Length: 185
Image: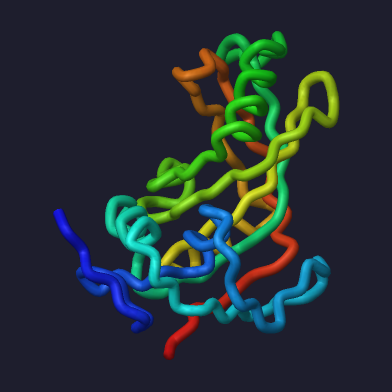
């Protein structure tokens, strides 16, 4: 399939490339007013990409034309069984190694909590305690309420099984250090 991408702000099939995808793929963008201070909310403006690669990724994961985006960190604990009694040292290490080497782009992140449509990008992982990993994320959704739920420190996350690493995960609340509103232009 051949795509033609121009310098307009829209990609093939009307999919607009948002800050999530740009951050996810490590592409430099023009950022205006973005703050990492946890007490502020900032709006991000991204330069229109001209990359056929970015346009194709956006199309394949169903990235909406405009999204609300949150940036920050969160921690998770990995276990060998659903009873969450024994730490899965191997699974936690493998997950960190995989994210640090390959990054992770989730086209429908934690639909059991948020419902469909949340796009997640995890680009760094670090073991912070023997039973806890910290993850750096950029998460986006066309539905502002889903981002509100993500950033709410009282949101509960049921244990979830990760077949790739044979590990049961308990996600702790997400710490959103900044947020971006959809950019309409």
